[in-house]
Image (cartoon, rainbow, N blue to C red; front, side, top):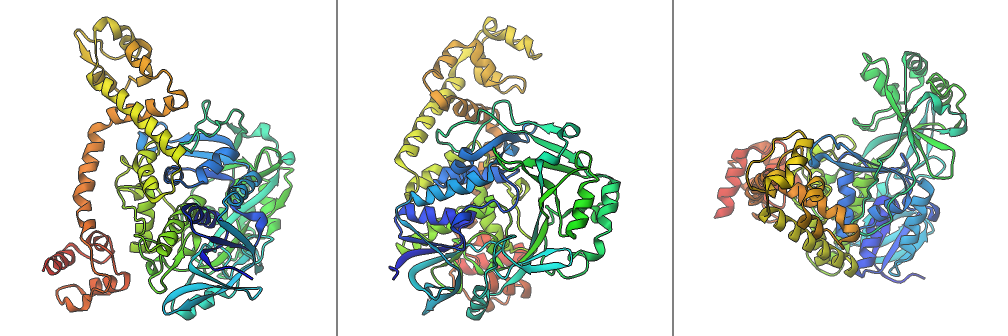
Length: 623
C-alpha cells in the first residue's frame, strides 16, 4: 500500500513542518504523518513568532533556506523590533500572526513540495533492524518502511491536560494524546521523563473594554523576517496591555487548593521563564501587579490571547479572576487556560546532528527534546530534516558551532548540558552575541544553505547582489573623505563636534550621534551608491553601518571564537574508552562516558569536566 520512503517525519508542528520541507526540498521522498491535517504548523500557545533571541533564530532558519520566516511574513498582523534602545546584538524581531492563516500557509507550503506525501494517523512504534531504524507502525496498523525517521511529537506523547481538579488525555485541548511510542522507545533503551507547559484563557474581544487598556502599536516602519522580497506589512492590528491587581491575586488564591501544580498532581517540570499566573503570584508575592499582553489571534476574529495569564486553576476561578482585571469586568471566554504534561526524552541521548545515539537514522526534534517555543522547535526540525536527508545520502551532517548561529548554541546546549526545565533560548546563552546578530544571519548562513542545496538560485542571486552592494558601500565609507563645509551643519544639528579639516567618512560614522542615513543626506557620492538597490537598500544601509560602527567589537569576538574553536577541530573518537584514563576525575569519566562528546571543545562545556580533565584528554589524544 505504501512505497518505501527516504524519510518519515512524525508530527506536523513547527519542527515537523520544517523537517519535512527541508528533506523534501533536498530531494528525499518524505512521508509526513500527522494526527490532524487541519493543524499543520499550529500555534498551540501565543499567536506570535520571534522575540528576544527567538527572532534571531527565525532569521537563521530563513537564511539557511527554511520556511518559518516566510510563513510568518505572509501571515503577520503586527511587527515590532524589540530592544532597539540597546546595541544591535540585542535587536530581536517579533511579529503577531494570524493563527489560522499561519497554519493554512504552512499546509500550502508543504502541499506545494512534490516530494512530500501525507498520512493522517498516529505512529505507535518504530521498526528497527540491526540498530538502524527501518520504518514505523501506525495506529491503523500500517507498517511503512523508510531509511530514516524524524520524531517531532510535541506535547502529544502520553499528554495529560489539567484544569483544576479535572484532568484528561490530550496533546492540545480538543485533540487526542499519542500513546504507545514512548513505551516502544523505552523498550529500545531510551530514557524518558515528564515536562509541563501551559497556556492562558482565550477571551471574546467583544467583551473587553479596550478604552481602559494601554494600546501597543506595531513599529511605524515594520520590518520582516525573510531576507527574500516578501511583502512588507502595510496595515497592523494593535495589541494592548493590562495589569493584574491584589484583587485579582486574591481571587486566584481561592483556587490554589484545587491547583494541580500545588497539590502534586502535576509531576512534570514547568518553564521557569514562562510561569503560570498562580506561580507568579506565589513566587513574587511582594509584587501587587503583573503585566498582561492582550494579543489578537488574527485579522478577522474577535478572539484574544491573554499573554501572561497562563493557568491550570479551575475554570470558574480563572473567569472570576479575569473579571477583576480593569477592562475585563464583562469578559467571556472561548476556552480556559490549562496545563499539559507530556513525555520528553532528555537530549543527552542525541549526537550534534540530532540523531539518536542508540538507533542509527532516528532523529528527535522539538519538544520531544525538552525545549519550548515554536522557534526552537522549527530550528531543530530544519536541522533534523537536513541531516536525515544527509544520512540517507551517506553525506556528512550539518553541524553549526556556537560562533556560527544561535541554532548551534541551541543544539550544543541540549546535547552537552541536557535540560532540567523546558529549554528556551536567550541572548545571554550565546557567548558570541555580537557575531550572531539578526541582521547578518544571511551573511553567516546563506553560503552554508547554498552548499547543502537548500538555498534556491533566486535566493542566492539576491544574496550575491546584497553582498556586492555592501562591499561597494563599506569600501566608499572607508576611503572617502569630506571637507568641513560638507558636514559641519549636519554635525551641529546632531549636537556633536564640528571638524576643522578634511575627515574620513568612516571616522564620522563612528560617532554615536551620526547614522549612515544622515551622512547620505549630505554626501552625494555616498547617496548615489544606493540608487537602483531597490528593496535591498535598507538592508545594505543597516549592515554597512553596523560593520563600521562595531568593527572593533566584531573583530575581538571573531578572534576569541577562532581561539576557542581550535578545540572544536580536535575530534574525540566516538568509541573512546574514558575508563582507561586514571588521571581523569571520577565525575569526568562518568559524564564523558555518558555524553560521549564529539570534540574537545564540547567536552570542555560539560558540567563536571574540569580544565585539568581537558588537559589529561589533550595529552592522551596527542599521542
